Length: 279
Image (cartoon, rainbow, N blue to C red; front, side, top):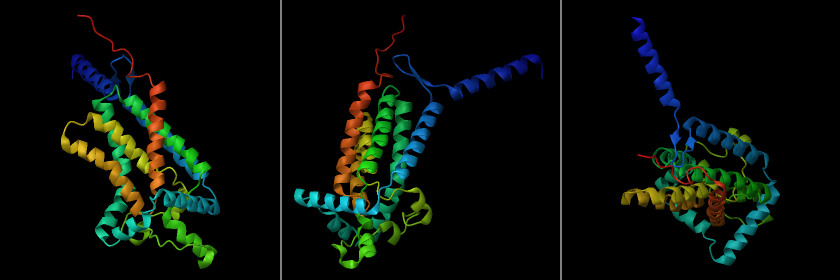
């Protein structure tokens, strides 16, 4: 191979590397880079997982907060968690679907939304990336200040304190009783998961974030329908699996509404005056 061919090969390799690490140029001239975005998401996830698990509250406090939530929902006329789960338990395929949905869809949907915005709507990406980060990290405040026992653990607490210690609820931990690829009952999960991080429901918050990020940018009727159904199905799933109360979902929606407006207040990338190229 002569020198000319060698130089040509090296030039192609350098061009390929530049394309691989190239970012997206926003309409205001700012740039975002996929590899930096992956790093940001990874760092936020590590912070979230670490702080969430370090802030686990005491069982007695989490139980008393659960009774408080139940009283609030009864007073509001929205205490239907037991009836909803009892109905679903008659349909095993529904419960199995809910288990797998609960354990996987929020991850896949969140990553899809980030990738979709980055590739198709890069000007909107920074705003919704910041919304996701603010909402997720602010959720940690709720976990620390208001530890909350999910419905699936209520009867376990009564068993520890004696059957006459309070009302027997009868919730089923579907992740334990029905097929799934994991459960909070696994020893590994017990050591790495805060069992009382129920308020707010970030499953529901992330689903609401996906709705506001994707709904205005979907073109087909079926994609719009799927996006609308996503948070609705998520609320139903977290309730019938006994992982959350309805008010947890409401708090998740409110949290990400707040996060969106905070993100709008300081996000500049992609929202400045578009740069025009002179002819």
